[in-house]
Length: 205
Image (cartoon, rainbow, N blue to C red; front, side, top):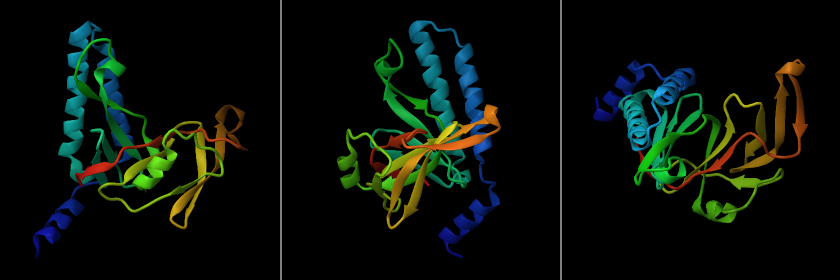
């Protein structure tokens, strides 16, 4: 048996991580951040430390994810088998804290749909606001392509799209109103979460 086959067999023995487990762990992390005293630099050090520890924890369980990769911005994406994705965004301190001169992770809302687009599409969409009727060219996962995320998990609105012929066709927004007996209607705009990422530089798993 080859080493690759052995590794694949070992991975099958490990239970995949579910998005509910990831979400629960993320909630614990945010609760830890909330109870830390906000004392300037000490607060920054404490928060960035527990975020770094959480990233390391997820990476230590990488075999439980279906896909993990890093982009040129330093952000790390963790995708589970059902397709939902958690992004650990790498960002300069100045965009979140009043003090600090380094960089740190900040966890973004979990998204439900992940695709990949080429550099030519990133260039075309740079600074462009997307509207219904837009066609997005997609490509297979790999080094050099960029992630394209749609729809925040648990959000009341979602971007409706059709997939096929090497791309996505963005249709509009589906809104759900639980208080109105889950009435659903369509809007001709795009609300639900859209994120165009940086090129992938490392495939972790």
